[in-house]
Image: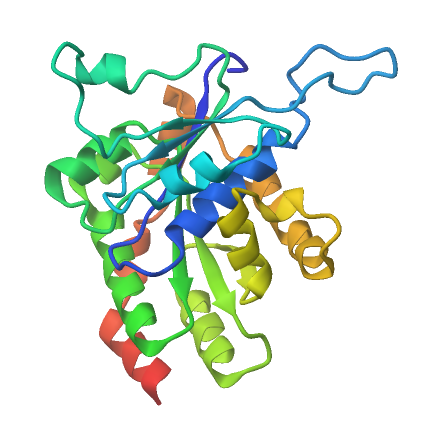
Length: 268
């Protein structure tokens, strides 16, 4: 499976949950992560990092703006502005093409993805990440979206690994505790927790990822969590027939989500 790109979708049905922050930072992290499938050096270590593409499906084009600010001195992240219509003399497939050597594709999904749009995104995805903020409204909306996702007919026919990201968290606060309680009630793993720090705003304003800011103490602390997220993604099965059958053997996760109960708990 080394020659097949792994496709990671960042999505939530509610806007403002930090999808673009997750997508851009994940792309930047992969671009600085050694690809174990690359030819080994004399010391036995991989010779190159992942080749990364970032596909922007959000009409707000925030990922596209981030990419336009990215300095050429940073590792390349190839952008595809999928929110734009193809030109008059271009097919959609031609307009959205990615470099042949790409082996990791990060998809910044839009919050209004429903029905056919959601189906299209799921068809081109190997792993799904759902960022959720620590507020009663976001917890309720995130729970509903997860329920819709996990019971979607296409997802049930071809399951994907799904992970929840606790985003913009103030640790050791009541809202953080309520979010953690909510995530514990899901049959979906909490695969990463990212703090609410100005370092993310600084990174977005400069076309950088947290991983590109070693001089920033807050960024260095956050970088540990991003490396762990990449490790979790890489541990998931690829979308071949065997891995799909393994995921199908799991109990249906959505059946354990009671969004009303959890929302009431979050508001308590």
